[in-house]
Length: 156
Image (cartoon, rainbow, N blue to C red):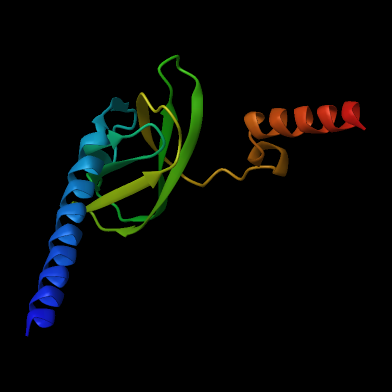
């Protein structure tokens, strides 16, 4: 019977530790997100940003888009441009908007993985930009790769 009490105590300790760690991780992650601001460039359709938060490595934007025109929007894209504190362009995210009836409002959410986000600009465009292979390789990765090749060449 003593062995069962000891086993029950250990099991209870593990469960309490698990719950406590989940709660602390949740509040730790919530505390890392900071608000960042920006502007909506497009007048029509009306875009409202409800929440925009970012950490050092990622972030998200939540909002709504409302078709305030008299016609149905067949296919458009919400373009979110992200910038650093020094106004360096970090990248863009595109969200597809299809079959938006007149006076219809729908929510949207975009998650992204860019570092040191400071502000955003949101607009509506007709098509998504296509990137070349060279644009997909970031300057940072290209610099590290070339530095690695140079060091390897010098060593051997």
